Image: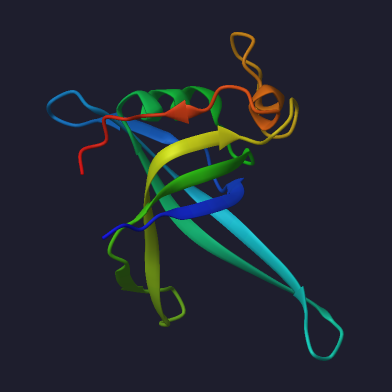
Length: 138
């Protein structure tokens, strides 16, 4: 069996990096994916779906270093088992969890992302280097 999800969205907050007890880097961030369509009444409709993205090892370190709140990225990964919870209004919800296999910068300089070491979001958006980690254990 094989499954893969591709998302394009904006970070909802700065990434949070931590280390497992064995020293493996792991970075998490929320990603807002917006969808816009025209309804039957001719009115524009918008819907935002939030994903919690987790990156491991080198990919985690790179994401933590280069991404900031508002950065536009493309994430390719696998969907984990959704986690059910009740929101503040008492409504049932599910947390959509994605383990990233690849993250590509889509922001251009000044669009929620700073330039570091000559690597900019614009370079990645034009087919430049992508963050990738072949060592994800699964």
